[in-house]
Image 1 (cartoon, rainbow, N blue to C red):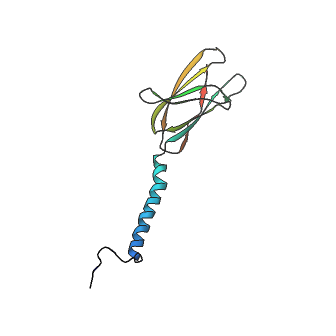
Image 2: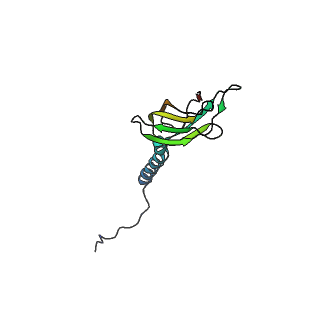
Image 3: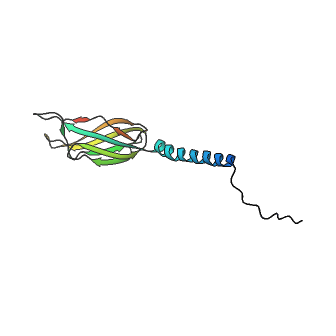
Amino acid sequence: MELNLHRRPIDAPSSARRRCVLKVWVAFVVLAVLLPARLAATDLRGRIVRNDAYRSGVPVEGVKVVLLNQAGQAAGSTVTGGDGFYYLYNINPGSYSVELTYSSPRSGRTVQRRVPITVENRQSQDIAQVVLSD
């Protein structure tokens, strides 16, 4: 009688092996879905308005918005649109300052203002509306 040690008969996987493969597959899917959501950076949205002699809450277009980290380095920048809104994308959680640079409609001079913010770990975050004045 001759033994063939190089060939194994192909047999169906056992139910224990199928359960193990299923558990690994489920764990992989759960990690693939939950992990990126937890590690995702935050998208910020803010609005700049001003008060004039006739009405309040007038959107300000063309305000330069720079997001500064704690070291004072730019972490993002944009300009407000006609509706006064600005958007900054993929910002890591932490403490920042939003630096606003705009031309005053009354005096015509360039004005800078810094507003401290804290970016939280979530998909999107609205920043409190900023009211400009001369």
